[in-house]
Image (tube, rainbow, N blue to C red):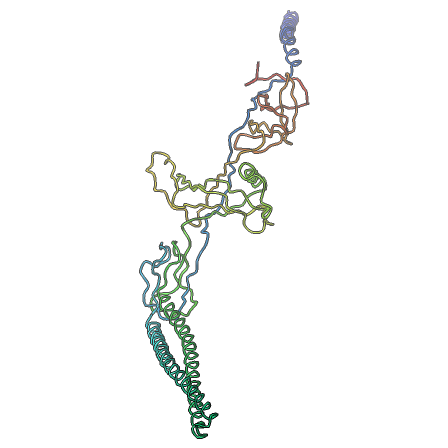
Length: 450
């Protein structure tokens, strides 16, 4: 009986296993046909339509604000510093014409008085010579009349001597008087010539005296050292009581009426800026092949989460061209109104800060708006595949195109439409695929899915 029971249990186990195998080992026929049909239509892909890009985009670079020039103010005369205003300290602002220093003017004032007296002396000498000239001219006129009289008297005696009515003694006396009158005339003429020459020489000396006096007055004025421009004092070198020589550096002043930003442009960034010249300037200047268009831009400085924006423009390329180490082009951006910044809204409801002035050392961002002369289309940046390829769906088939990328802005890529062969409205594949072949069938989902 035990043997029969064991056999029955074994048969029951085999029967149960056979039933389970039949239930789990076979798949429904309809599901297999659906899977085969799906594979024949191609893989599913997510697409986004390409769109025309007609607005400007920003080329963003970083740079450091610097002053356009720093002026060294030096002493032009020697002497002791007798006055230095309390406001003349490093970091203080000064206006053009403000007094910076006073150098002791006592010796220069005495020199002015001395030369003024010398000038007056020369002027008196000229007046004296003028009087002598007029007197000599009067004497010369009298001598001329006396000589004319003696000539006529000599002529009459010579006529009488020919007629035997005058003696030889009378004739000799007349000749002697005529000779004396002529000699006196020549003497006064010589005196007049000498006086006139002395006057011309003295007048030349007056010119020298006037020049010396003007120089002395200029040196006296230079005892007061004034600011040559409006700016900020970088450093003050001397103090009140110091003795300085002519040429001694007194102070350095940086210009604050305008500011510049020193930055570097990559070749592709410079190319975009150069293209902007085609919109406004036409042909480039043959005299300066590196002249850069004066493109307007923005200078942005962020402080405590708040942006301050200044209007600016591209000024020039700095140096002789490309930097050999960084392979970039040094560039200067001009900010004509460093005090005219506009403050953006404060985040988190914080009170807005006053607009600061752009000063040296600020690390800023330059935003240069750029328009493209070429037709651009936009698409998600993730649509650009390795090797610069773009997958486009046309007639439910995937086409592989070589993308000519003009710019990548955050999550958006801009392509040159003509060079890439991408048109506005083309479905662009943004989903990944394990294996891709050109002209392979695909099924699309997304903006262009039917």
